[in-house]
Image (tube, rainbow, N blue to C red; front, side, top):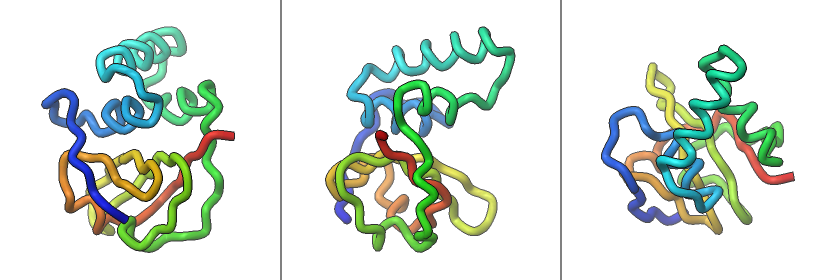
Length: 117
């Protein structure tokens, strides 16, 4: 697994929008706007998995629970990950390249893997 810096907007807590932006090849602010509109429509805050599902991307029930750097990825994935403490994060991986603003993400552990159906 390789790392490539990707941070279209300097914003704390923007990992979901950043990973979706890279995965869908859409503008960061457009992703943020679409998610906000969906949140307002449904009256819910946590709609990120629903957003993915509406865009034909689903949790593939991956059995792998090791570190991202050791994950064998083909194609495009959204990875929900954590540090086994209290830090949760989301990244996009495309053709074995992790796109994020910090290379330390390679040492996070995989919780969920989302791929296009």
